[in-house]
Image 1 (spheres, rainbow over the protein chains, first blue to last red):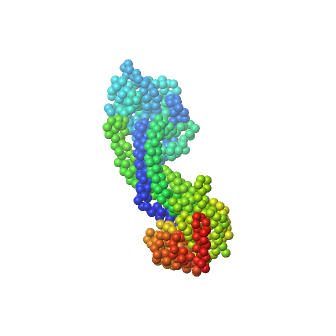
Image 2 (image 1 turned 90 degrees about the horizontal axis):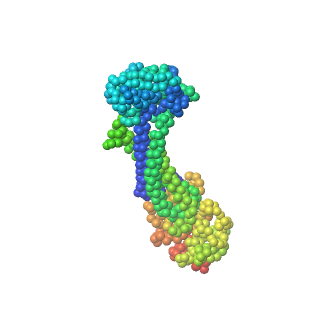
Image 3 (image 1 turned 45 degrees about the horizontal axis):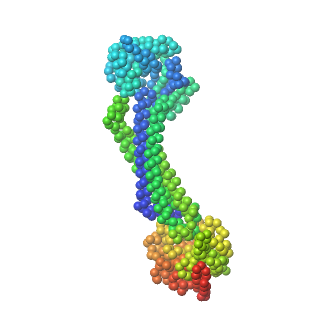
Length: 405
Length: 228
């Protein structure tokens, strides 16, 4: 009977009830939409940045990330690599041997990041071949290099010219070699454009005197939801006292920090949004409580305990909150789904900049049920807290005064 | 046997500023089966006395015994439970729960008493028959006339099988026909079930039907007339 009473009370003033439900619905809708766009934008940004070079995870010898020197290169047996590749969540492994070296032509010398890559694996993750602006992509084992365009300009070199590389190899051996420039690669990032040199992995291992060794294995993971489980599965395969398995957020702390800052800004917007909604809902609760004071007095008068009456009123508001939150989820789902499937597209300078980096200038909405549920839960909790007001009012209500007023 | 007994009941508003005595030392005994009207001019303390007897308000001084128990000593929850079990209220403005049907309104207090469904159904049928509204069980208050609503309110007051009924100006909003109808029902219940009724009223038709008329003036009993 009490539930029935609560439900019927909700519909005593249909217009007010629908206005309240609508305000809760729009709060959930706006909250979910904003959060989905933010998450989607960051997800897309992270995917772009991570797949640009780092990967969603990397394997190194223990301590390499702290001190990135070639002496911390490691050899991973083929059966271990096969075992990692066979993990469902892992889309592929991208082995690299990288260190810094001096590159020169005639009398010009510059520092560069000289990276040995498996051309096929690298292409599968970073689409390096797509960045070749002149010449052609690498083939396994050949004695040739790809040079970043900016670096080639500084050295005044072009395709088919010879590049001299000098570095310190594994365990202090001298590393020196000259290689045919097979292609030039273009990076949107000016910094990368001035320092990248790629060799086939075997060629790099020969150059650094690090036969069969790698400094890192980048991991290709297609679904962001698989990152944690994929890395955990690798932890089962490898001896974690000898190897470090790092997630993208540890590899790119600046990106994580930028995301946190952006989120903090949005919390202010959410706070304002929820405050407006909370005042709206509170107005309704205030009106409803004032309007029904007489009735509350009568109910207590005829023998209804205050706690039972408070429960009925609390239940009414909770039902309103639940209804609004559920309808909010229902309304948000198709909207967010639409913008997930048809991302907003940037235009103008910002789009040009993204495209220069090789990123698609889009702004997709993340379609994640947990976003809707969390937004609905926040609005619901606000409603539940506001429902304490009539509870307190009933607790202090004097039936005679309520009926007289 | 006294169903209600008050001794020196006083109710003072603004005791620290300019005290206003709504009741000033009221002693009254009401026995089982009485049909009593409390009359008096506006502001004489009729409603205040009814509220204090019904445990809706507490006296500033004095004692109120209902069925031998001093209700002024009960806690808030005990008082609520006491009202639920022993007192039926009929208010001037009917005060039915608008979202419940007539049947549900009558059933409501029995539900608070945790009576079984069978018992509730039987009692509702019996009472709605008794007030002549057995065909309006599923009607909401807004679908009933004022007289019908007040008859439902009487049925609701009787539903928990109270010791007595307190009715605060029950006919104030009714037309003559509805008033007569309501008084007939209450007189019959009083006679057949020996139910005690205490009214506050201005209505001469109610006063004419009462078997005892207690007149209040300025918070004191000025006249107590028994017509048995």
